[in-house]
Length: 275
Image (tube, rainbow, N blue to C red; front, top):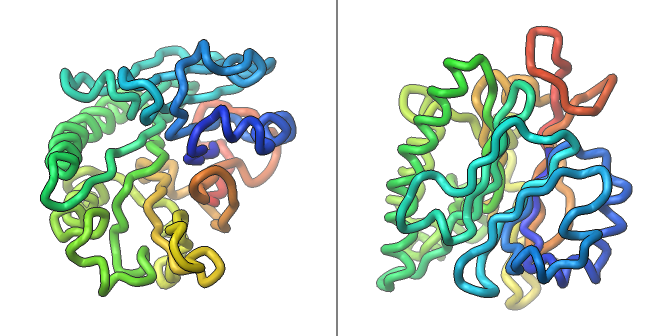
C-alpha cells in the first residue's frame, strides 16, 4: 500500500507517473493533491487498466483532491467523512477491501493567525471523531485500518530538522502535535505511526522539503506524511525505508514474502513492510 503527494496528477503524469504505475507491485495507491477533475485526466491516468480507481476532487477547481487506486474492486467506498464543511474539499476517501479499510488523507495546511489555521483546526476536530468511529467499526467487523497521506503535522522533534525555529509555525504547533498524540494514543485514537514504531530513535525520515535554499540537498526536512494503522496491521511492519516521488516522499506497506496481491488479513497473513 503506497501513498504519495503528487503535487498535481497531470504534471506527475508528464514526469513518469504512468511508467511508475505500470511497474509498481503495489496493491493500493493513495494519492494526495491531485488537483484535477477526473475528466481533466487522460484515460490511462484516470482509469488505467488493471486498477479500480476512486477520485475525490475538490469543489474548488485546481485545489486539493485525493484518489485511491486498488488492484481489487472495493466492497465499499466513502468520499469524505460525514462533514458538511469538508466532504466537498477533496481531502478524504476510504475504501473497504478484504480485511482492511484503506484511506487517503490530505489534511489542510494552515497559517498561524489566519482563517486557514482555523479551518485546519476545525477539520482536525471533526476528523478525530471519524477516526475513532472507523476504528470501532473495523474492530466490530474484524478488519484492520490504514489511513495514509499528507497529515501536514510534524509530530515529534525527530520529525522536523529545524524544530526549534518552527515551534510557532503551523505544522509544529503544540496543539497540532497534541492532536496527533491523541490519534496515536492507545487509550484514545488507538492508532500506530508505522514508520516511527519501526524507527523510534531515528531523525526523520523526512518526507517534505522547502523549495527555499538547499533544504533537500541538506536533508532539512519535515516528516508530515504518515501511514497510520490499527495495531494489528502496524505490528506486521518489518522494515522501513524512504522512497521518492511527487511533492513528498511517502511510505509503503506491503507483504514481506509470498503472494503480493491483497488478501484478507488474518492469522496467516504475512508481515508487512512500512516504507
